[in-house]
Length: 274
Image (cartoon, rainbow, N blue to C red; front, side):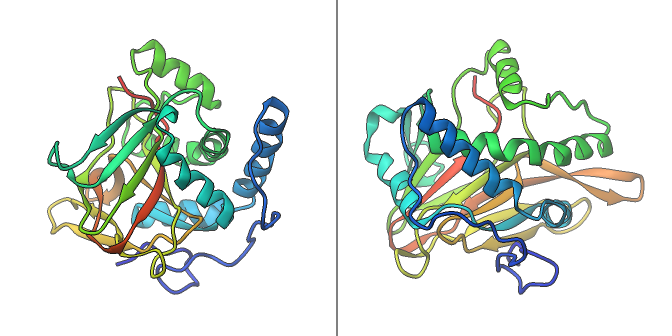
């Protein structure tokens, strides 16, 4: 079952209402003033999404697909960063660690403007969902209103390594089901953005979610992640109704085997690593 994009659209297709508008060839510039300008534009794009519908879908399915947020030029710019090794703090070979096959790289601080801007733009919209889930599961909600304050708390607790990642998959590569947990402090939602066009740049490589439902068989979700679109999904677990109120349903994510071409994605995790 693909992640739905709205209750009125075909499954797996992005919502069409309130589609953000921006210059088709907008390119993130560098420098303090330019970075601030780019961040405002990113914030506007994310702000204009139908967050009521997205929140309802994340509650129902554990994931929700947005309309395109990044232009083709921006996606290419981000994918090209993969070969700039100075941008990253580490590279993971998934086969070496039995995580699957393929590679991903963790960005170093300072993050590229586009990555930092997207992370900051999404956080305040995901925060109400996170707090609602914590209340349903009777858990603490340690997340402040501001992302920088939350990250400062992560760093004070020893989780100071940046977690946004750039992933590259070639033919035969895949990612085993897992959860992105890097310490005791966890933000319960994260975002992945497609940087290539399925069917043109690659085939296969669907994004997978598997939910372990209470006293029932696991439920799988497969989503084709188009270029520039973002998928919001749960990091660790999500609340589901049970006979006793609410129960935590564990969720893991991965990527199916890439059959042809090459696939790049940007992953935005909102807690840092120890």
